[in-house]
Image 1 (cartoon, helix red, strand yellow):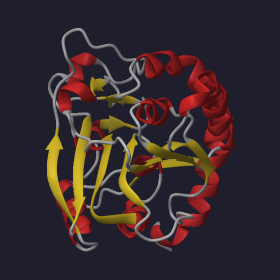
Image 2: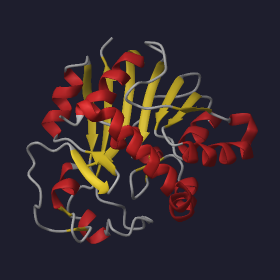
Image 3: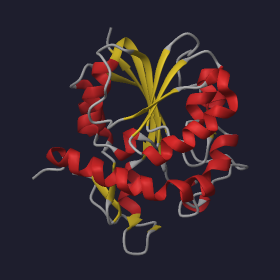
Length: 256
């Protein structure tokens, strides 16, 4: 049985894991994520520098895998009409508590599986994910769904692991190495925990997948962390990430 056919099983497993992880994750990472809400990746490259997103004011925006919804709420303050989606109810509880602190700019919170988005076709001008649903759901399921719910000319922007991270990750020691430990061809799933997987594809496979659903690549950004950057992910050290890309930030466009 292929991973694609096991999408429902994987979604349920990942939901259980994130419900279990959520409080600890927010305690460890939430402060930095909240302080740098509009920023990409593990080292929080500011959106104000990278300028990935289309203008958001007055636009319908979907965040796929919102966590505590720091990104979503920040975009709502800029005039976007934001739907913040996560598969984990525990994560959405954090999002609800966070968004209540700024009641005038609350995104709509939705619990759903990114493999089957509960929205009509052409509902959104922009969809984005920062190590959210484009990392923790199967891209062979999410890309067609996002192509369906985006309007013609709409943007998909997301940050996820680069293939270099997946190839150099040592599963036994749970460390990044300077050696290739995994074949590039056939990249798809990575066992993150006994009951959870995330996903990564090779560059060519991403491009092929986008093209097969009426999408095309505008930009792919891979940069080392800034000298003064901070991360709360200690297993992604600056020594490694200054030599090889760990974050891949994509800007994808739906054909008009």
